[in-house]
Image 1 (cartoon, rainbow, N blue to C red):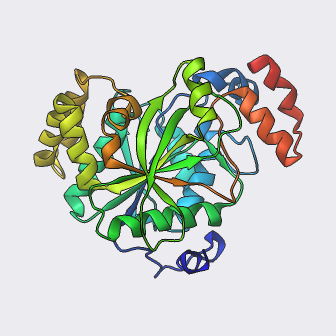
Image 2: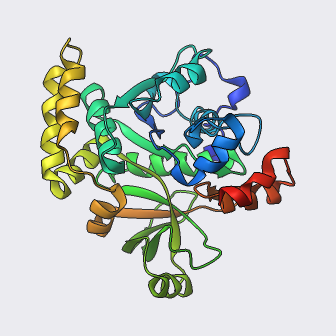
Length: 330
């Protein structure tokens, strides 16, 4: 993996002339409300602070950790943070020392992860027709950022190498038959020269029943980390095929970009837009367009529940004063 790692720039030593892969764009999903961690963040901050702006597993907020992780491969000027109306004060505080700062794309309403991903894909595609999006949620724990982003760099390389139609998922080795994650059933290996094994996807199941999760666990399926890479054009096309009504609403925004009516048009597009999960509405419906890379050498966890936060802190050997609130928050 050393060939990939040489492409990465440690966050502490970022150079202004470091641009990473020329058409790679980072998309950080930071619009969630974090309802399941609301009890914990309320105890920590005295307010219903969305979890991505909370400091939980180290000295930095989850969003800051994610932005630092992305910056190992993609510069801020090609990074888009997708957030939600009402979170502006948190975002301003988070980015106040950033220069250059990433682009902030504020959604007027919560219409699910499909709208968040596809809105970013439409916006980036308008600026860079060759763009490859690297999409990361902002509420994950990763034990080794460089090794993690080396996997992502390999996924970008795969997409650059005659595979423009694919969406490459990052799959984690499961430890249990978890029903709160998506599951990826592996197909045939993809013959390639890359460093990380790549597989076709036989099926994708988002938050299956307990019985189905146990079957998938038993047959060697992987957890979906919801970290993925795909060409902006391929993601837009997937939205057109699977969510045509949402696609049409987002496509109409292109004529308003950069005008005084852009904010109004975005509000109109979202007003009656359908709410949809990117995993259920798109990934489950097009397994033939997917590929999956197995995450190895890195510990990963979605910090979506108090129990997962507690397990992560225990694994790190960290026991902050507020850790006692985790049981109450659950």
